[in-house]
Length: 226
Image (cartoon, rainbow, N blue to C red; front, side, top):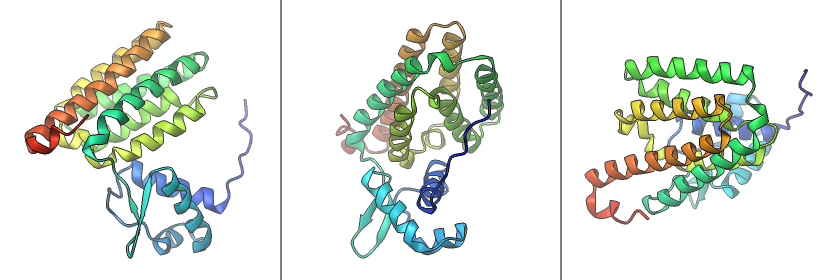
């Protein structure tokens, strides 16, 4: 079925461009987002870009700092436990809401993603795995019945981008991939409640891995998590 054309305003285009810069880690927490650079990249005026920046700042993607401007936001260590718990809860809900959307085409796309991720893990290619990890979760959550869940999860993903967990903890990639396979297998079997539970465990494991890494790096500060 042909998808209806969706009109995007210039502010929408700017917003999507900035979101993609953050999600792809092309810009990192603390990096400035300037209207001039976005204007040059998209060929649009700075007015709709300012509108996009205000919108993203209101949702936590960006922070507007005095004498600096818009910078990419990040979660502090004390916020990580809550954020990863929310990711698990909202991701689980998205799977349950989107159950009817996991047809042969989507399952084939998930299989292809896992195959590519297997190659990335074998090569210890963290940058590639980060990209495929984002794609995997988008395939899970981007359904007609879970768009609000997807939007909230994208916002939460942006807040944790500072940690780039797979670059910090390359050993986590293999565990993450194994968890992705278990989620896929549950969905393929129609066990959506089990798949939802596995998503919660998956996000908890990610949080625990990052916490262990932070603790080894700075024990005094890491104890403040949660």
